[in-house]
Amino acid sequence: MKQLAVYLLLAVTLSSCLKETIAGAMMKSETGGSGSSAISMSYQVNGVLVQTTVNEVTNQLSTYYRLSCTKTTNYSYVLSFVSTSGELTFQFYTDSLKTRNYVYSGSNGTEHFLDYNNTNGYTRYAADSMSFNVTSYTNSRISGNFSGRLTPSIGGGAPDTYGTPGSILITNGSFDNVPVFY
Amino acid sequence: MRRQLLFLSLFFIAIQSRAQLSVVKMVGNDTKDYKLGAGLYLKAGYPVSEGDDVTLEAGCYIFSLDDNSYTFGTFIVPAKLGYRYTLNRKGNGFYVEPQVGYNIYGLTTLNVNGYAKDFKFHGIVLGASTGYLFSLWSAPIDLNLHFETIVDKGGSDNYVRAGLVFPFSLKKREAND
Figure (cartoon, rainbow over the protein chains, first blue to last red):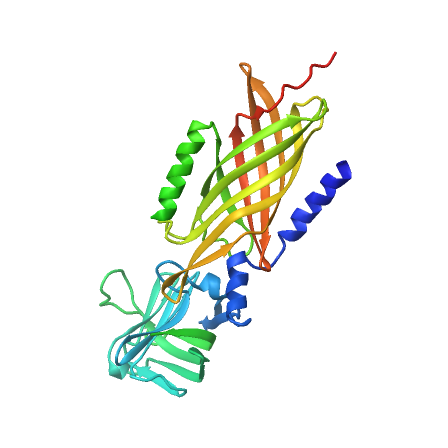
């Protein structure tokens, strides 16, 4: 009887090492194995790495997604990358997202793109820009790379004071298998 | 809403039958967004020797996901058979208790592409407890820590439970001469 107890305890331990929750495994089965494919993004802010990797279950929260691209109007999609250090967003001004390069520069107007450890980055000046290159768009998933140069705001609330122009460098940005919602 | 009504009904039944309440937490991969859960269960022991009991336990637990609204989360109803082994061989004090059983009903509701999607499951239940049985003013008390896993459909739901309960026995343990 004591040995049986030990074996049961071992079985408990081993069983609990299964990779996914039951719902996660069911979702993976329903989508033919692709349901639990990794969704990821990474970039560097002035050389410091920011990255998020999730699966279908952990990407979906009750009120938002960690990594997503959502068609918000007839003429725009909003790409959102949430990480432990903040959020990076990019708006594709198009009625039909395609595999091509999308660029927004400061000459188009001041726009907010980055919240990094409570520092906000904007395209405040003409030399500032964000460039997103969508390299793949299949099965409502997009992948690609990006980079940019932003200016930080100083102070809270509506920003009217900015720091050193172009001092936020976003480099080596990449995103993979990000879902597109309509 | 149905889930809340079901839980309230079970809560009423539990109070009438002197069931035990507990705090539970889902653990493991992909569970960090789950909040602390709540559970109630009925557990009875049947002494089979001076130091051991066979136990029967049935309960239900609910875990909310993200915002405590219970719109998304997990609800389970496990039933288990266990063997409680007291280390001092006297039927009290520290004990270990493996359990095995079946999950009568399981439901996880997730936000999938903006819609609530239900995942129903059953599964084998494996559990392990350790605790301390003692008496306080003649009332038996069981202070315990419990780990449990439900295995089904290629995945597993795991949770830990901390309990301070008033155990009851289906048979009086024979006194030691």
